[in-house]
Length: 248
Image (cartoon, rainbow, N blue to C red):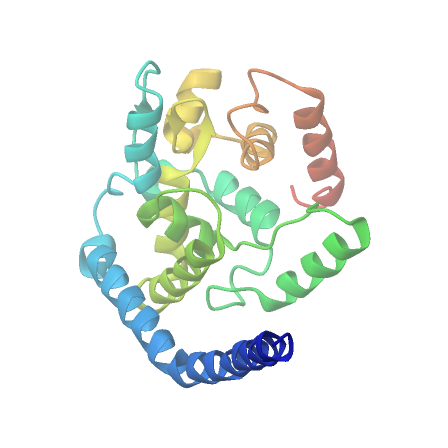
């Protein structure tokens, strides 16, 4: 009588083990369908946020997703934003920011794969994130169109939108939009608002020294800027001066 239950238990275990390969097989068979569904959902999402590139090609910069998000997250802060277009941005600040943020801006098509490889190597050697590789086109796409924090899906959308920006707009227009919407301090968006806030001048009068300070502000504008003069800000400013010594 003791043998019967033991045989049933062995049989039950074998049955459970047989279910596992079956489940794995079914999951593999359904994987293409799942991927197609996810791709369809992503295409639908992008279609909802896809910009009107004809409208972006001329006229003042639109209210960016970052500015909209700022109004929600920091209602207590006064928002300073004065888009001025290319004529309101000094040639110096345009050149300094390109040299600082994206030296190969004129050579790539939205993504600088050489910078991506270099950043990946440096981050791997350091064991932490010490360098990014987002181009001005990617930063413009992120600021204009995307909400939320950093994740793989958002980075993918940033890449797609950056390539679309490069396809529809020329480099000069992309840079103009970037400088009109980039954050330069708490509630301070665009080079015109930054120049007025920090020095009481218009962005068309920005020279080399002040342009360097704005470029040093871009990585973390809320904490490290010409008003706070933190050690991190001074370090970035010094590094930029060394890197761009032949510039003037």
